[in-house]
Length: 209
Image (cartoon, rainbow, N blue to C red; front, side, top):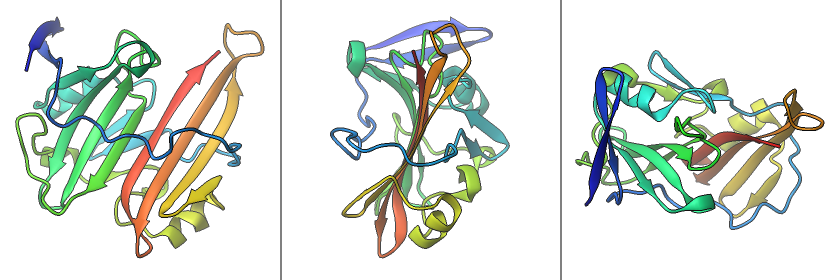
């Protein structure tokens, strides 16, 4: 594994060119349905007292708060992605905090979070245990692993799309900006369930012209 270090303020950031635990692939190969939600399902993720705001909080800031972790990277151009990986052995879960290589900008702002339950989620060099101070974890409306499909639908309404165990809650809006007509904001929440309870969750936001 090749690593390169940069300095950010008073601490160093280590970038891993190839990591052992990359984020899992997306739930859907293509988004072929309209975004139906009237409000964004989640604009942030809460890790203990740390609020990770999508497109604002950076991976470096999260790593500084955690005092552990490695910013990893893979891919080029549109496939480029940076991330931090943490484990919750007691909860049987792995968590990826992600920055899209293009949309996250040079500061690697967080554009998404993925959490998934595993029977044997163990701490490792590439995916260390999440510090207690960054727990518990949740998205808006206290949605997280273990939430029920019924409760999520009561809070957010009908999903924009459903396929098998997956449900997609999508919002698309606009905000003022330098682009003609403003910026397009796409915010999403994707859940996969088993027996009515969420065992994987993907959430994030990107803004573009």
